[in-house]
Length: 436
Image 1: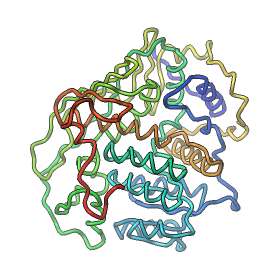
Image 2: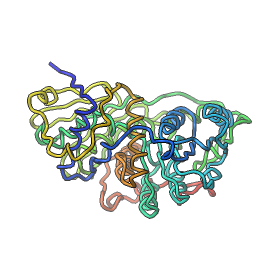
Image 3: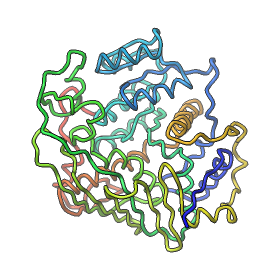
């Protein structure tokens, strides 16, 4: 019988400390155990919020627990004005994020724009001397991710990516148990993401007067406006995103790869694509298999119970946002994980009971970011790990697009003797919006 295992916040945070005993490719950052309480007024940083619809608004409000929103930016005037009103009359308001970054009174920026803007905005923010919280997925292409990692390293800025499942107790426990050998040798991971949307064709229209359509498009091809390309539904267009593979995949593939502790070397994706012009163009149906350098197999598909199933030679663990189950999880009550390192951390601030749900995870994730900004250390969802996780999602989409298996060199970050696939590591970028 399956059982669900829930932890108190104190017990969970103690459990994560032992993960550092395992030599990782993706280090489980001990900084996640630092304080998540709001800063005092004397410590509060000045925040500029870029992209304020849907998740961008959520992360800006969470950042406000730790700093003061002094500027807002969105290419949609209606969204921008609503955001300004929600944060009071004091924030400055900008249509172009570059003007916001030029302000000397901003320490930190949050980025909640569509995916095709993430890399360029993070790079520009780092060069402007700002620390950054950016929504996932980190990149639109693999090559821009490589450049982004270089710039973050060169500038020394702190960057947290919004793959908040790394801060969620269930997912962190699953990774720790896998890495601690509680299911034996890891053999296979199965992920279910969910279906992509199918719709179209859509009728081109005149852009509304409150939207800067040219600026919204950024690096992507200049095409006639239709409402379905913008706001939440941008993710169903390959020009701006990558469907469920880079949406849910940026969460679940990241956790799976964190546990696998290796990189893929073979990718085989199959999919059906819509034939409608000017309609959503992400796969209708898809499944992808990966072989990792350490021999582990990862399978990703779009139908089934959303979540991650880890299979070892001695057991299985299933985890999603609602539960973590499996015999090894149930056995924790009588066979707890070793806690040799837990007392190296201060857990006095973790007395509050854990509130279930997405909001609490985002608060903790945001709190970790501001802790790391103050302490100048790497956050739990670091830029290198998230580049590699996003790259795995991009590899899947490339294989599906080409309709054939691919061989990948993780060290070189390019395909093996495959010039056609290598061309898909990057995309043409409109002049003036290049990621450089």
